[in-house]
Length: 146
Image 1: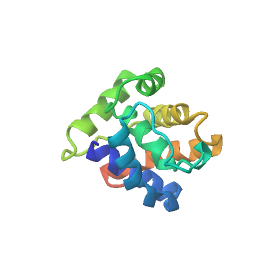
Image 2: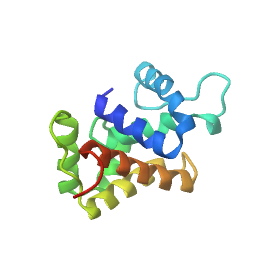
Image 3: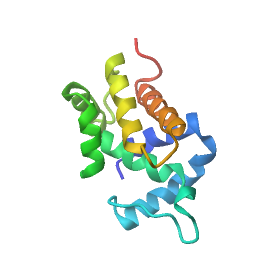
Image 4: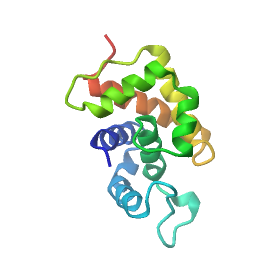
């Protein structure tokens, strides 16, 4: 999976649900093994027990344009062309400095993450993770919007 997707997901989980970070490597393995179309819980785990990383990774990947399908369509519905272009630059040129998103673009990113996580996690978790993804994108620039 795209290293920028993994890094943004890791930072989002670290800032919002640090106990879930340990599940990230296992989630990456499951997604790579089973494909991005439908992640299933490990054997013996109920759907409610699926780690957050299994939901957040595809959401961040869709947001950054690394996957197609229904998830990416949901993200596209709320993210403007300007925001899509900025996120694409981030993914395509990880070594280049990331031009920070404007406040309205950050709102779009947060809304897209919440939409993609709807029905998969609680509304509170979705909102927290949406803000955490925005925070992780800010860290790509080195901290804050200046």
